[in-house]
Image (cartoon, helix red, strand yellow):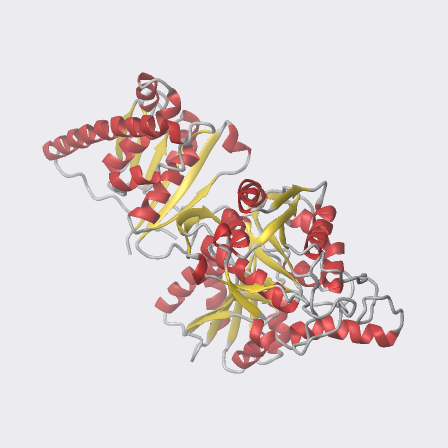
Length: 202
Length: 388
């Protein structure tokens, strides 16, 4: 059984919960996966470090919460500081370059970065930053299909801004493809790193 | 009991990505609920919010009442007015509803109450999970009565069991509880809503006899009295006091015996038809893990690990917590070494297992005070201890 644990983090108001909702809907309804989504609903969802979590599996998800994320998306420094330590040693870390200053990358963590907020501002409004991030996430993680993500958008973004959201997604996606290519090239040059111990999961 | 197909107006057919709270609202609408009276409380507010948006579009009414006491009163009024009605709440609101829940039991009002449980007592943990109102659901109002309580373990079951709750409430003229919790209530998963023609809905048991002869508490052959439609000219009296077939107060021990026996036996006498459990690998098992709601999913994790360790283990999931499946527990108690019962409270439903199993086997409680689900390791440790 393949299981992937994903955590989206940032400030309340950035669309962090919407990120997990869109991705979860895409996986559950259009990519034929089991996808269980949980969100922070306390005061943290309204301004401070906010997180949403998504567990994706080929089989029914039993334990509903993340134990050690395989993928961590961070769109604020506070959220990065809070959640980075729990990322698995072979995990994927995705950050907004302008908002997160990362520590040195540990273990076999793959880090990808994108100025998602700046890109969204270039598109006219920073509210699209989460969609830029989702496009980027889709390209670099290979957990969800582009088609499914786009199909999931109606109903989860305002109808009149659907096109703008797709535009933002595409911008992030393209940047992700480039980033992926760069990483592959760099990996081809570098000799293989020693095997890191994988943390046991609940 | 007359079954009809669901009114397509209320059925949002298709595949959706919903949380348990929204799924409860959709289940209610699909079952024909056209009145919602409630007072918002975390973590159940999303159900009320969703109802407020959806119910006017299907010709129903949403009222935000001044509190939970009034919410329950509004439901009772709505049912006498001819509607199917429901509300949703959590711990503190559930406590406030208790008096009028008793009234609904005494008046034999079919209605549905969803309790998205959070950690208690008192205001406790508003945003975090618990399963601590299970005994309150059964015993919370004063006097002797019976209710039905269902425990969904997923958003899909929140939808399915809310429909079942309405059907059971109409069949037995009794309040039915959907006892979910914050974790399931706020968890998003795929929810399939079938076409209206695939959803069976129990129609209210309407009185069709002559005007002037309606007796609100005269039992039909199946033991359940009829309800009269408003506007057809039937005059009747109803009360929370002990009453006769006419619904008139009769304050003596003889009538009390008839009245109380009736509201209890209509459920106990039909328990075999009402009770639903899900068993896996209980045949030949040494240990059976009993659980309900979200804990049943977490428990499976532990059970899988126990199997790997060579323990003969099965699971029994309570879909109906009330009435409690004591017959089946009694049978299993004679065959197993121990029952292990994790629940997100200090040990509530486990007492029913102890009572039903007598001294036939060990009963191991795995309590959790609330705020989170069990660590599967804690359940596994209890299993290993129990098998010794």
